[in-house]
Image (cartoon, rainbow, N blue to C red):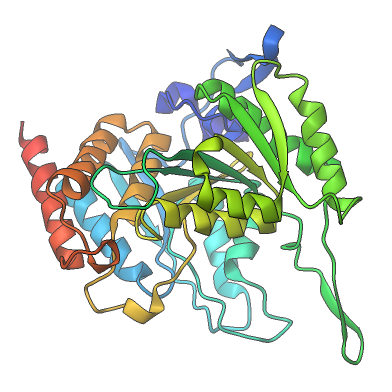
Length: 389
């Protein structure tokens, strides 16, 4: 039961983000002007993955730099006194069967929440499905939220960027429906439904209201894919009428890609189908410092999963002590905020901010010479100093 798994009463959730998983025992009712109101639905049971005041969270280290980044997260949580324990599940990206994926899914369903590194898809076999995609589909993590915001201590071409990308996570070209109809002819099916399009559109507009955003831009290719992207665009336009306080417009994906790198300040909230979201997420991460900075959040009706914003394994730099840990540390802060551990989240978040923007301890991807462990040690020193008070 959703209410017993994510209880606002137990977790004291105060996050501004709209997500059913964040408000498990509440229903949302529309008021005039599109305002959403959360109304309590009564008493709920104990949060199932909380034992003796501690939370149990599934940890999927992933491939590449994932395992070492997760090790740093565990160390900061341990020394910072964070009441979170991890159930680790190691997904082997080379194994053809899905037994290890089933183990991960079972763990997440048991705990309700997970943090993960990216899992590489090494096999070229058409029968092999991306472990990342399977997790999103099986857990119905229908939305990915990426908040790209400029950091004052990081040199980038554009300053003062503040863009949120909201991506549909479970259909479109990532529906895993491909086949070879005859020799040399492959058909890949793109699935777009009104139900999922409406779901992601409502999420985007609710997010905009609760986070004081002014505009939602739907990104599409409806000029060519008139039925598939046309359905997505028309559904978004229909839902926008319920939110008259939020400006709505749309932009074709090719133009949006160019505008995002040349004039990013025109955007506020981008509402994206699956594939376009994957592409623009990486572009947006590049605008604010690259894949080592931004975290990503995935929400469904019952489960939540936190990871880096750019789904890059960093295989080429694994074990070299030069990977930027900030994106994964930010993902751990997102996790803590989701669990209602706001004090711990703020301490770690402030430590990350000071390390990057005040002390300017930067790894090579940001033009610095610091090692991964230099960044972690600085964050740890600040966390320990604040937790002693």
